[in-house]
Image (cartoon, rainbow, N blue to C red; front, side):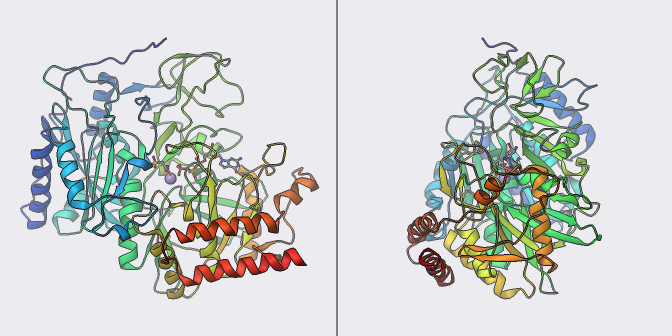
Length: 617
Ligand code: GTP
Ligand code: SPV
Ligand code: MN
């Protein structure tokens, strides 16, 4: 039984006193203006609103969404200035099958992307966007990825007919008039257009979560444009995030000598007070936010958060690789985030949060699986239905999320907006079998090979069967805007160009015993693995060679109970299973028709040799 039916109003947003078009009188601004007018002529909105990013504007916007039924205001005394959105049941995650790279040449999209012929795709988009904003407000939102005017930062403008997208992008990026100033002065920017694809006829009531069954998320890498149609959710709608900061930015990085990566970024401070910077690429919903907010269980160590999802990496003049977090907020997975797993996130979520698809408590607060050990006796689930703990479905959607500004995390670095030199890069995934807890690469090429061959079990962050194993190289399978084999080559070249390279590690918090339970406690205990990695970098920890890389001679296990048998299983390397994986890696590489760099096929051959030797020895 559905209760709490969304209230539907057909009145326009009350934003008349905000959002007037700025005036600059420069050629660069006129170009922006011409683009805005062109999109408006196609999409035919009722109104155009220029987002200035002010607090007054934001409150008006949030208020209008509450009136409309898109947002539910949470209990002000429990969760100040916070809101709950419930999406359409058909619009709950990224859609990889509807994501396209419309490069001039098919080979530049590569076999792991959906390629679309650009002219044909433009015709299709012209069709679906025609009149798609009827009855709605079209927002024009200039944003900066990285601090405004920063040396590694990039600008963009998102046009959208979704006020929810506006409110989210305002948290996830830096939005405001200073960005328009830079654009008007001639700074380059990326064009992104978004429509939920739900035009309103005159007098037709709106729905709480407008969307369209037909969906397109399209990237034009040559002209630096993004078009997204039909979805209001996450990476489909916050175009600065995956579409720009990963797919388009990876192409910019290929052409300009830098890297756009699906990585968290942290500063680890040792008991001696020395700072190290670590980036880690794990696939969607595989632990980036958790590691980004790690609260070490071992004494003397601290971890500061810099970013939880995306890192832009560039060589510095000293030959080291420097990274920034281009985002300004966290769009984090709610389920599994609790006091016992990620207390830092729980603290960050105390106010000013937009929650999407979590459950509502009877006192107007939020709940999701894993927030507390015991579920409340009664909830309204993510679809607006009554829910009790004996229900056979989760109260929160498995890909339900929170949107909160980065500055609100108690663990955030004081200087989190600055670039930091990388000491280590981690690659990981969810692997129930085979992959040890931690393995150090022999050198850069071997590390790139590790990144290029990662597999991981699918999660609820995109469509597909949860748990199914698939290749997710560098955690970038859904996010690389060009041919993945060329991307492997770009990684090899980045290593050749730099002088002091970060060490590369493969980690796996998710190995399971034959009884199906996780062998490693994870979360705060992952600090033990981080400690070993840092001690390897400063030269004080020992390692043992195996055919797949170097593993710890010893791990600090003081204060935890972990059975010797579990520990042995966590690090077990079975040559036969690894040889079988090597077979699959060869098949995977073959998909790229000879485009995989020779240095990586050499790595595969060397791995097989080492495994054969181990098998015979
Ligand atoms: P995206 O935002 O989708 O890119 O994902 P993410 O990599 O930031 O994922 P996140 O850190 O939010 O983790 C997703 C899920 O993994 C949550 O349900 C966590 O509880 C779980 N998780 C994170 N770290 C660990 C760990 O060390 N061990 C185990 N068993 N689960 C973990
Ligand atoms: C991911 O899926 O990796 C995310 C969430 O970080 S979304 O922004 O929806 O892509
Ligand atoms: Mn992500």
